[in-house]
Length: 449
Image (cartoon, rainbow, N blue to C red; front, side, top):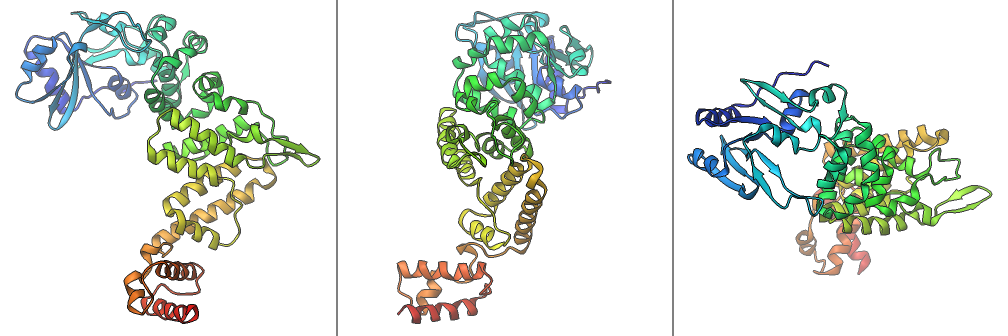
């Protein structure tokens, strides 16, 4: 694997040059080096230097400087409207809470600074004059597409338990394997994750779920997932005993996760959509059944999302998708139109995407026709969006004031009439045109009177 050259953007080069001109060492470091060597555009550029924080603040006084974390040696400098975190070489003290060092001490040694980092692929530094500084085999691990801890994996995870989930996240997002020693430590030290805040777990697990290798990682490290989401463990290996299913509940779930777009809302809905199945299982001569499992899955999803402190939008949307994921769809487009009227086009599309992934992860007996029908429903949604079709009250060509003008009294009757008009437009019994709708409203008023 030939790794690309690194070309930091101009604003980063400015920071490096200013530090060098003042007599300090300075390198870009960590994830930006990893991403650049992989040929990806880094999202953030971090700089490490032997300049102390107060010297950095003074040196960049002509720029906007944010004293991000002086006690840990970090200063954020904004150059050309772009923030750069500049951190002094440091050695971490004792980690008492499995997350952060109680103390840090500054050092003049880049080598010592790199030694404290989590994974070899994140422990490389670069500057144009000297090139890449790689003391722990980061480039070799990039070439081998492998995640490995710097030094002893057990020590690295004891220092910061979140690194366990970060290892899985990197492996999922980059589609890397995990080195044997690191993998063994992940399995044996997984309970360290119980010391990590829910917010940090949420961020890392969401990124993991959206990775290109999420299925493989969540299958190989299911025990780690169940440490933080024990509600999902009953799915593991649970035979559905049903001719419509060819996978156990957990494997089916991971197939559905990979079957939806890599968007957090959809990936979480996919992970949780069948969580209630084991608790609802019954069996008879026709095979296994899971009556009411959507309701039970919603109950579990509520527990999981609340504990991980999900944002409210994701919480509400995921619960709605899980609740409706088992909808039986008709061949007509009217059912879908009515649904769009209730929940909006975007959420309806999410529901059909989840449905398509769900049926696509079932047995072959009806898979092709059900996937084809899901694709047809997605095509309808695309067409209605292009047409800007009326499927909600806000797009109806008349409103409450129009109905009051023809004598319909203000209050409940207005809402009932508007809903009647919308349903007839959706059912194509009326065109969404003002005159036609007002004529139908007058007729409804006379009949209602």
